[in-house]
Image 1: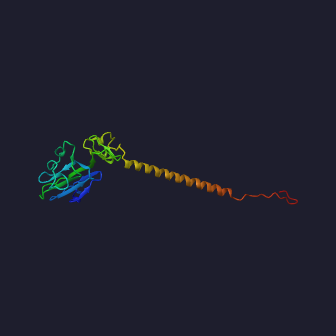
Image 2: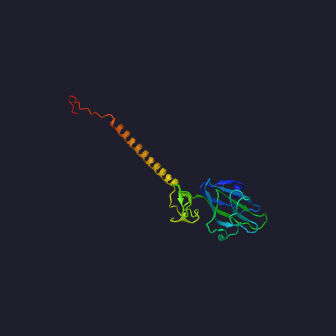
Image 3: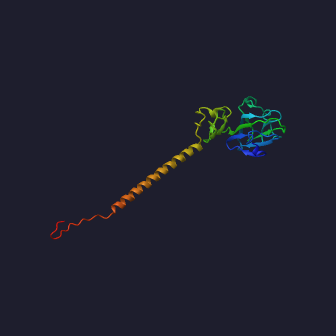
Length: 225
């Protein structure tokens, strides 16, 4: 997140966001990042891991693009206990297509933590398309977000029926990828077979054109051949 302070980040289906690339966040941090979904869609954010010193450090989540103008979703969060930042609704939900994160830390020399790790997902409440997964709570998320061991729906339905965390719901993109792979394999073997057949025909043709061996049966006087 600290690599994109002050930016508007397109959600593009969903993803994972970490507070900073280093092992620990630094003091004096004041970073604001806005997540932006497609017009008419909404954003669901879930905080999965957190290690933020509560002595002046915190993460705040707001509905909308501006910290100053839009509603704070709950109190600023910090600490290391997941219970402290898990909502009854299963995460934080925007009321528009934008949601803003504000991460701050004081400049003191007090020990800092490892920050946070969150997932975000774009969703809508329209009839789901073929590229979307229909959540049990009537939300539609990208089918690529199912069975990834993260609750993007908010009710856990996108993780239902999964086997060992693997994706049992094939998205349209993955189906296309499988089909393309099969076509490539078929073309490879067809090309190899055509080359082998052509080579054999060429070899047979060369053999049929070889000159015949003629043996003389002429007899010479006084000799028997």
